[in-house]
Length: 215
Image 1 (cartoon, one colour):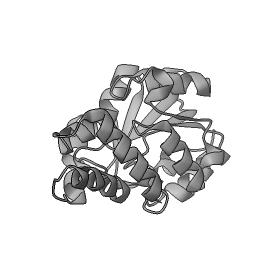
Image 2: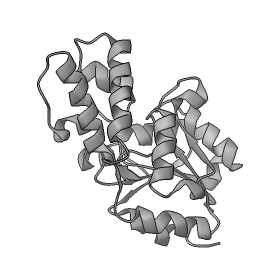
Image 3: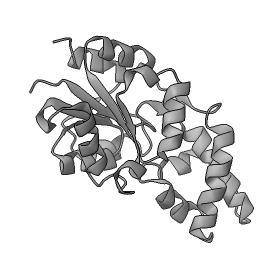
């Protein structure tokens, strides 16, 4: 397989955004009289989209109202409480220099992902930053986002790899017919990700530089 395109999940793959997600989740929980929960618990519900997170962690709340509260709060904390994961700041520019076409496919609200990608200094390296809103509000594990990413990169399924950190990323890539690699240490932990049988498991993001050499 000759890889010339790479698509990436965001939360837990490119960036550690769990502190910000936890802060906004607890803001909503407090609004509805629920107690605070730790980041370690919130991590287990990240990855399937905000509606799923709210449904699980603020089950008593009217969904639309709770989503609006979360988004309003999240804009105030996401830029200061999100950081790149180790190895990302070095690997992404180098892969771009080597000629790889790249995109982000995240279940996070796309407006937030685009703001964060730009604020974290990665905006110049991605041809596309996609969210469910770009594909008829179909979040992962539906394959639409990855397929749209391939379309925007001008790459076929056999020329691309999808890099994530959760089983939902493996499910998404399998549905799209794309090779999938998992970087350990994301939202749901090592066991969940490896049990989903990705094509390769990376212990560090920087391993991509050896796996994706210049053509």
